[in-house]
Image (cartoon, rainbow, N blue to C red):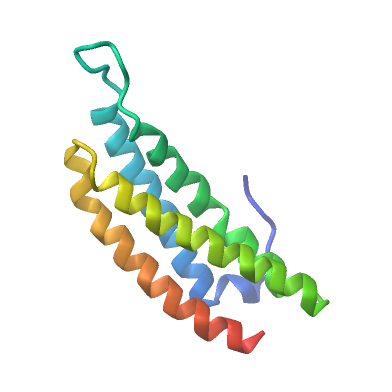
Length: 131
């Protein structure tokens, strides 16, 4: 889904990093799904495949929360978007850790995503001070 955003918001470093994280998580999820979609010898599926979808869903929600927080006029509603953004970042980080335990070659790329999330958190703290 494409969200119409004011041009000045797309220049924010935190927004750019969120877009990088979306792209990276989608690519990693695609790579992981190829390895994790096969059934085990006993006929069961690998439960890690669900975490790969979660990282895509959570990363896709980052940018709209940034836009909503920037455009919100009331501080209490603005802080709800900030809290949601912090929650999403924490969940993303946890799901990356869970996926690193999977039996896939794609797990080698998850430390890259986690390092991008660390950079995002630093940008997030700076950005929150400007709101």
